[in-house]
Length: 253
Image 1 (tube, rainbow, N blue to C red):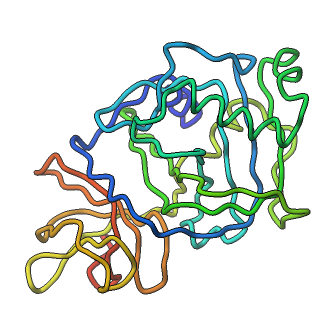
Image 2: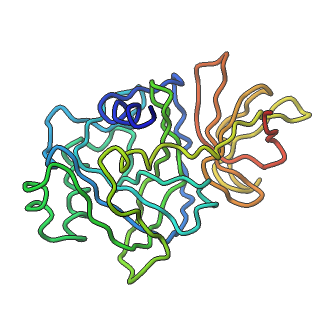
């Protein structure tokens, strides 16, 4: 069933949490791992394609994308990530993002366009060290979530401990980026009655938003005592991302 849902997600996606506060931050993380340049539909660009991550929802349909499996998976909540070479808030056009992804593919395999013409789907891999902005969660309209991050810098490395399964079919390949079943939902709670969502992992960073007790959170990246979360509520349409101290999170049973 998950395979069917993730296929739907890549074709048509929509934000299920209403108005979104992106919680933009200058915090970055370096991570080693395996990058996969993946294509479907022979990697052809579709002029109707727009970024699947947008402020008010939108359509996906990218025929090429980048998947990153980090060596330190616990820091990334055991998720395999979708990574984008640039921000995904709508300021980069679909064509420009397609070209950026394609250029990374050419860096991995110079004859990538020839491979895409000959094969309807496929992938190439490259051990890399990425500098990433904090991981965010994209909630699709079919109850399918995936985790994504913006690439600030990427460089090839000679090897990685990450091993990619061999002989995957197309569905198994797509299924890798569905959110890990280890992801838990938390209640955000403070004795003061509200919690500060911050721009960075300490009290020295500015406050993005003060939210009342009763909001929910999903941890998208672990920063030790501080966690980067997506927060949302079943009574308020607004959702967003930011840093919160672990003491403000209570695991839901």
